[in-house]
Length: 496
Image 1 (cartoon, rainbow, N blue to C red):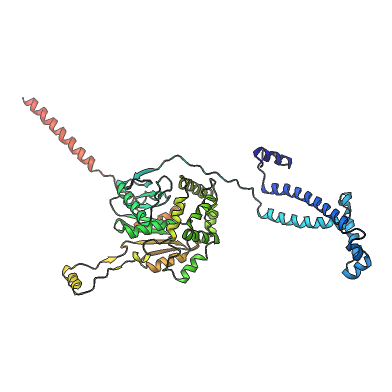
Image 2 (cartoon, rainbow, N blue to C red):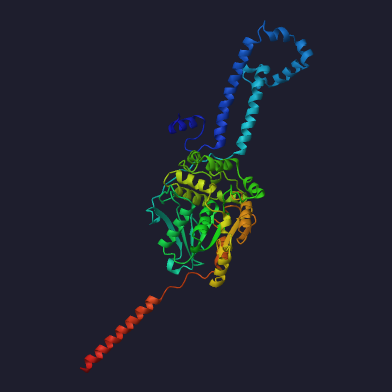
């Protein structure tokens, strides 16, 4: 196996400067030179074998096809004329290869091979990318202790708690410069086993909603808060709508993922979703549903390999034009790599497997359970009399707050057919269709998009709440009282 010094030596021998990184064309060119030389030598060897075994005086070929006139009658090829024309190029050959019948068969084969390699070289006329190694940063997150003793890592952005008009909780990272403009306090947190949060092998969607509930209480979110779900992270937002609806002011979903095996999906919705996905992604869902232990192997070949890679290749994603342009932007690439480094901090594949299984397994509830509808009263005369005597209003089930969904119409990661399914099951949800937008383009690095989102959720921006001056007023009053007492004391002293 060749080490680093061996590679530099080989490069120098091939005519490549040691202090310059060899491009793909240089590597191919030098490889082709060696390949051509080996091909010529191989052709010479084949020629010698043929001469010694088949073209002797008593061989089958000589006895049956040795007569030139016989060859002319059977094959109808002007052998002499062709060979004379090929001999015109003999001056370009070395002396031992001037027999055109043998030399040019080798040259023709090599020529075709060279064309194939050159076409490949033109198609990939870029330097061979060097995989960037994953760097694990020092721990930096704040953490709380959950009732079961686990630590949960979180990050707080936007305005302080005492000046927040609205609070948002998201189970993944989010960047925006519009938080202060709308007086938003944003809390993001690491799921169990991700980042700096402790793992929880018994987690399900109900425990996920409970974690969100305890986070809000521990950080002093006394009013109802908004929950945000994006892509596959939406499963935790759906769980919050189901299990802690009384703590939520509303939900904002972006390309929300649902269980692709949901029995409520009709044939058109299911086909519109699955046909957008790559074969590898379909296979990964199959493994998550049937053989989840095998997912660890694929994860360790991609984002747990210790090296960075492209998101579409790692997650087997099909991307539209605008998504493709975004992920190739260095700013997004830096954000994505930093996000990956934080997510895989613990180096354990199990939390990722658990997350994949949660996505495709039985959630413990249906999206239809979130539908706003009147609660059915019990049957019988007694229940009817009880209803009229109590004078109570109609009771409703499902989620009572607003649900907003933003869906890119060129999204091939979570296709629009999936949002069509959600809207059919939850007709009260407000769907905002985004023409030409993909899976990433509307949410990442678009301040104007964030302004539109927050305006839809919160109305006209009013900024943070004003500073509380109650304490200052009380302090001023106390000072005035002290001054008055001092003055009164002095007057009494003078009188005496």
